[in-house]
Image 1 (cartoon, rainbow, N blue to C red):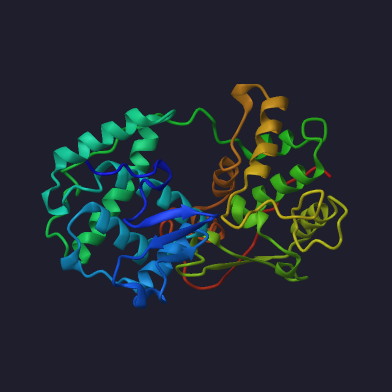
Image 2 (cartoon, one colour):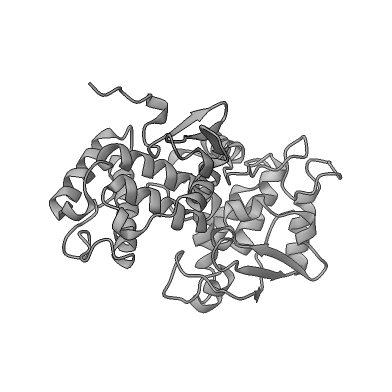
Length: 355
């Protein structure tokens, strides 16, 4: 009877294990010379690093890829590292789950009916938001199949239009607030945290994402511009937005820089210790906790709004073409997938803010 794999190692490629805070590869006998003479090779501390090192030493060819486990490994090496850090982490987590569920299945035998069965199974394993949880995994699987066709592994896409449908998700209960509502919500009596007030103001007039705002450092700020490299395109086009330093933008930046009073910190938005709220893996858990506490304790459920919704508020402020350029979209017809690959100089909107 085959030995059961350690639960901590499930979902990882064959021969991988987690040990002492790092991902390691158990080298097959006879291949030690190829792995620097070691029987256990340290690949890296993070999953993305481990896959890059592993991929550099083990290059798969299409005719060697037969099972989904092989296909997911190849995708993790070739595609995932090109995405934003936070996306890489989320994607590796989803690939681990997909590998656990269908890793042994043969890619060429996959039919549309199998996609529906997998979709339902993933939904049933979710602790909450089952349909959304399943759709995210199936969207990733769909892209894996797209790459499999591109690589010549399969001839026909089993999840193409007409073969498969995602779940219809319920719309979020949180609404998109108007500009006036956002401004009213950051009255000092409703929002006593000065750092949070400055954050909301900057989000409102620029439309930047949370990771981009929390990643701003003093070196990004000059008397003429606020320069931001869009995090979602950093590993692709490396799109840069240069916001003209209007009087209002400068005032908001000064407010943010004044709290907390840590002049040695390089970050615009910082903790009381001068540290960034943005972690290396692009997580912003500490800041999100602050945001949720504010919404839950100062607003009734019907009047709450999400941090992300302010970006939509910004987009609806003026004409579509101007908003599209300010938000970093390649065209008015696209949203988050296609970005301008050159530097854009854009003007933040001006609204009546309370000091």
